[in-house]
Image (cartoon, rainbow, N blue to C red; front, side, top):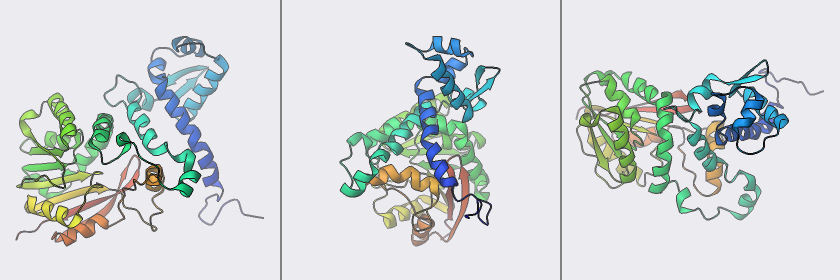
Length: 345
């Protein structure tokens, strides 16, 4: 007979059942967001009152099944037949919250799931035509997506970025930081909040900088932040930076040797470049969260991903004398942190 567990204490059948449950979890989360269930559970708690709060007719039995599933995956808490928001739903799925993640869930779902129901057809027929609004390298795509990234950064990612910068010995004396591919700019602003003498430069495409400017105004930091609008492949970076930060945005670099050499030139002596990107291993088969999240995009010819150590190799070739890599855990899973130092000439 086949043993129930392998030598590592894992059940060989577990991936099958995890895969079967995955689509159900996503369907429950998506439905909860689209129905505004977190807002409803903040006001009422019994199935009857919840049904009354929903538009149109509601089948009470099926509503209860759905609410039980929400509780089962941690989106609600059930007690004596009534339902409350879980702490996560109360904080991140209420539409009025500053860290509301519902729109990000729907946006990422459209990106990561739109092709998974036609894998066989795409394997046989190849990549389909991609609509302009779905092309990852298109400015209009990111103009829409950046709105959803701001709550995600507020929910802890900006603090994690600032913690990473704070851990640099060079941070204590740094006076100027650039966030390249800044998105809403909240990561850079979190760094500036902790270092009152530091100034920041946000670099991104023009439409995205327009959104970042609004976030900067909200944070009351307009006097300490300046902007560079353009394509980082062609627009000058400026110079005099002590720190340059890039997080999950270097996928569209066209000529890596020239790009990383320009970064090297833009830094002061003893300046530091910090990169936060995934690093795939196992000939492109791991980590699982990277491979699976990229599958739908890869099937349509948009396979933007870095191999482990790839960015470090580019940095060494560009003249950075000290380059270190280490793992860093984000909510989505483990990514690769790369720190490169420019020594005095």
